Length: 554
Ligand SMILES: [Zn+2]
Image (cartoon, rainbow, N blue to C red):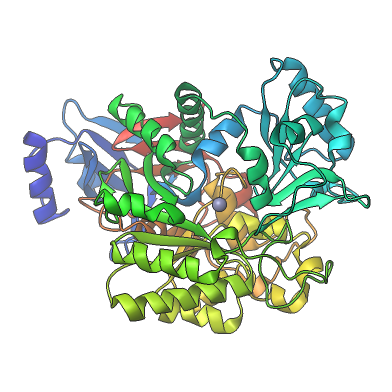
């Protein structure tokens, strides 16, 4: 009661009068970027319970200190709102932390040896999953095959994904368990990669992966909870206090609820479920934004196409390095009317829709469907989202602003794909790739995230990428498509308030303002005033969630 009353006073008088009750937590002597345009920079913050009670100068905020107030002297450190990752695959990321690590395997031999070592430690019969390999890192970027790994994995089925999640490599044992043979047809929206004799090489793309996914035993609830605990530790280490989980299927959501009930959930989760299953949520009466500050539901995620790395992103023009194809619509788009009907129905039910679209044609198709939703279902604050919005023609960029479609983007992909994307799409299409600057100029809302497990869930890397666009191979020191760079302030806003807007949460979080949730990140360097190249090495040194320190860097 005391806290509520003090908060009420604080809300009424903001920073103008001294507190009636002492704060629980006070941070002083900081450089605090609030992401509130009315008061962008302050030195100090007072927190009551889990809410921000006051912001201002150190002198003003010291008045909130009482006998039991925890006082943190920031010693000039830069503080931002806690980061909100608008696109992550949280369980997969957590499971990946516990599996074989292939992301930085530099050669096929190293790839094979790491799998061999991991298999040697694994119980017989246990599936080896995740991995996040990237053949684009190899001197000759040929897809790996099952022949490469069969001899080192005789007793374990293997189904390891490329880091974009749009293809997997199976060993022969896994293909056998799944019943995939040379006779198996390519499913709609998927490809079984075959050698010159028509034999499956082990690589399955997009919908073809389901042949194997179907036979992989589900992880137990305890294994999932362990993975999410690991994921939460990783989030906290990176100042991430909110996560929008694109893969919060019912069993994952059940684990979140259990962690919440146990008081263990120390990241805010917005869980999106598959768009194709929207009727389940609609029937239960769930609407966008249902839940509480910690756990929310009511969003749906669909797929329009695949990925650039897997040559399945859907373009108007063919791939330059594979002119037979211009990509592949996802199985949810066979036929396109199926996707449109799902979007219309889910929107009518009051749910929020987010659709993965990478190629320019996929983006255009979904923007058309979103326009149809506005037309058929009438105007409302629906906050339609396109996830990735990766390759855009100028005419589509304008539509994000005019149609108020949120561009939910992951800047790290730009410096990763930038190493090789131009071989695939050429310099003209590259101009509209990760078009942060043009999207902001068109009046679009950017929400930033990582796409973890696909990329590291590290906002500092994301901000560095959006601001410098320096590719990971160091070959573009001035940035890849440099005209699409944005400022540090714009990137931080997209990673906080922009993401909060994308989940209908901008009144509760996303900036450091009186009355909002007390989620904060303190950094090892002042990213607003250093050479942007240094942001890559900047670390989160403290993370605060609900007014409590949940991570401190040793
Ligand atoms: Zn994703």
